[in-house]
Amino acid sequence: MTTALPMLSIGPHSVQPPVVLAPMAGITNAPFRTLCREFSGGKGLFVSEMITTRALVERNEKTMQLVHFDATETPRSIQLYGVDPVTVGKAVRMIVDEDLADHIDLNFGCPVPKVTRKGGGSALPYKRPLLRAILTEAVSNAGDLPVTMKMRKGIDDDHLTYLDAGRIAVQEGVTAIALHGRTAAEHYGGTADWDAIARLKEHVPEIPVLGNGDIWSADDALRMMRETGCDGVVVGRGCLGRPWLFADLVAGFEGTGAYAAPTLREVAAVMRRHAELLGEWIGDEARGVIDFRKHVAWYLKGFSVGSEMRKKLAISSSLDEMDAHLSELDLDQSWPVGADGPRGRSSGNGRVVLPDGWLKDPYDCSAVSADAELDTSGG
Ligand SMILES: Cc1cc2nc3c(=O)[nH]c(=O)nc-3n(C[C@H](O)[C@H](O)[C@H](O)COP(=O)(O)O)c2cc1C
Image 1 (cartoon, rainbow, N blue to C red):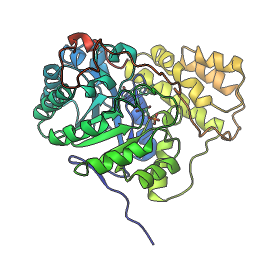
Image 2: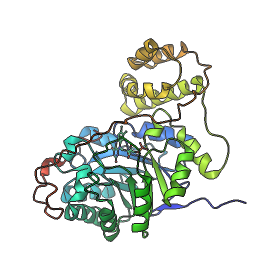
Image 3: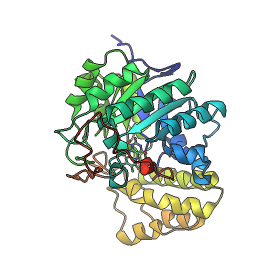
Image 4: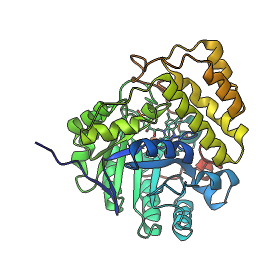
């Protein structure tokens, strides 16, 4: 018996299987998205790292590079971060007018103190009128482009916002919502609360809900779909140093074939290609290899590669140097047991830094600071 594949539509874009690469600052640039997309055979949706709306409308040089998509990328998904409704509206209008993307995602999940301290990111949905104003501006300027949003459960367990935010999103014409099942206070610690994803799905049956948090394998993705009733999954840290997880996700949803278990030789070839793509994208081989350094430990996780060699790879500054070090490894090693588990950030936080008096009144927006906007993207 064959079961129908779940179908996800983000506006006019059908995403099948319903798998989305989570936006990750400093990671999900065009080279990394391209790698993941190659492994998925072009299936799925791959979102850019967050782009600050002010930096975009001011045409900041770094930001203009971050909004670059490879010619093979379609649909093009840009994630925006902003706190000022007018600036968000202008950024969305610019994306439409200049044909910079096919889909816009709004980030309301960032938990970093420099953002929440000013009432931005995951602090923002607490101020319901501000959230509504940003969504109104975004949707009304987006024309035919679908606008989605990504958020956390709330600030902490005593200040949950996701159900209210979900309802506001529906009222304002948002196309789909992704929920990371943690509060800002939890940061990346503990376990994502998938029950919250199920509750949001029940609360906003009108639009697709995408579940996010702690998907480390294709089986996790299928389990999240089953257990929460969500319409699709958003996968972040599981892909770090493991872009072939997208091949597994497709295989898992389509019920075809075994999951990837690359040898170190195959991993080394992906590392080489990732570094090369970064160099091409930046327009400078050395800077590409330097940017790649942050990925080395993730790719090598679990393999027996001595600390000396890891260090050498993590300080390489040319492709030739990287090649030389990679060729010295015991490349016949098979995929390490346990390397499919958690990776990337896992720390908790505990306290969310907020502007004075922020929690007093969810409807009073007088404490919102205009400089809660960041002036650079991807941070
Ligand atoms: C390095 C890193 C950068 C991130 N940057 C962003 C970002 O720019 N925008 C965003 O909405 N979420 C960002 N996130 C959060 C992820 O999109 C995702 O919600 C989170 O990692 C939980 O999903 P996971 O358990 O699959 O990793 C980032 C996470 C990490 C680890």
